[in-house]
Image 1 (tube, rainbow, N blue to C red):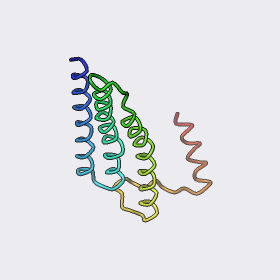
Image 2 (cartoon, rainbow, N blue to C red):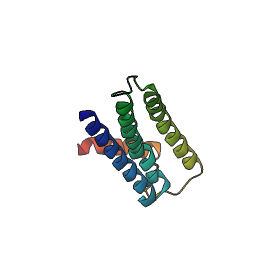
Image 3 (cartoon, one colour):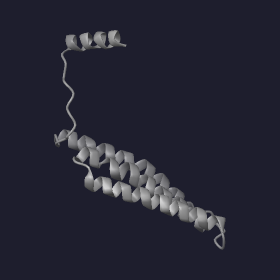
Amino acid sequence: MIIELLVSAFILIGATFALIGSIGLLRLPDFYTRLHGPTKATTLGISGMLIASGLYFSTGSHDATSLHEILVLLFLFITAPVSAHLLVKAALHRRVYSVAKRPQVLARGQRAQAAVKEREHR
């Protein structure tokens, strides 16, 4: 009874995160902000569902520990940040439009003056 409640809770939590990540993919304004939906929230959503699957198949009539879910989870946590990083690097290289303001490029002397002003401000 307790295991079924835990499995149900992890499935609901995972589905909620996956839904939020998918909505973020649709609603956010540019490529860089859209990338956060699949890489952050959806990764957590899939993780919740995999934990639920691992709990379900490692208890009850299924006595073996579920190694498949652990391996998929490990693979997911390794590949999601790497693929997001490569996508952002390619977008930066192609100069994909962003709604974020670009930082001002300062000359060497201006950087030093800005650093001094910032230290004085603190």
